[in-house]
Length: 368
Image (cartoon, rainbow, N blue to C red; front, side, top):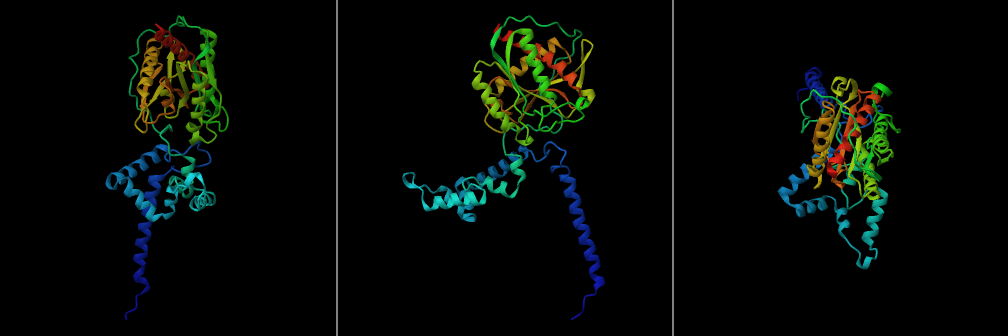
């Protein structure tokens, strides 16, 4: 038998090395900056939207081809322990199978009736970024669906004539991303574990409406983003509590700041004062049930129109997005971005005062 010379395998090794090097290059090109680092407040691409859309697409394709029952049968064939999740004890008494299932749940750290926990056990990042239809994707520039009115020659109007007085809150404010702040003031985009500049803006809105117009405003100062990608899960509790404690609320605002603008895009001048621009975001039912979103959009249009008439150039318009952002719990809930990372806190606070005036103007219009 003829011997293979060592020299003859050198080209093969070289070609294989080039092949794997090319694969690695493609991998890093596709997934660069997709994984967490110590400085980033959240994981940009491994967002809830990524998992939600991908998993929904896979499940829909499988169920459309095979049907739900066939899919369950296949899963139970490959994972027989899943069958335990269907077994019920008679008269509520524990059976051997149920006890076995409970033991496996405790020892393995999964729930047999919830296959998603298997993936989370093997892919820890899924537990950091939960699969949800409510998370807010901050990547890229927001697409404006409703553009502001053309800038008029008139500028900032004096305070509106208010005919409403209320000692019970008609407006509520909170910050899902409590740590968001303004780089030109604090040097960072987030003050991790602390309250950032957006909380100062929210408090200024509360102060103006209460002290200047005599309308009570509830502000929830709870920090929701200790784990950034679970922010909306945490703020959901605040939203439900605010609605429960204040059934008479007519407006509910989640105050943020943007992260995708240049300084030039973030600024405008109102009556000679440099202030931050404002964007209103409305969630839809694109990912999950949200029958109230069009009512929220109607409120956004009213506020956007009032901003345009009172302070031309202040509003960036209205962005309609796929997530719900906890707006599904109310027919008068909006997410409001005041400024961006490229603003100062003072510029955003100044815009907050103008936003407060416009909101009171809309309240009066709604009463009339």
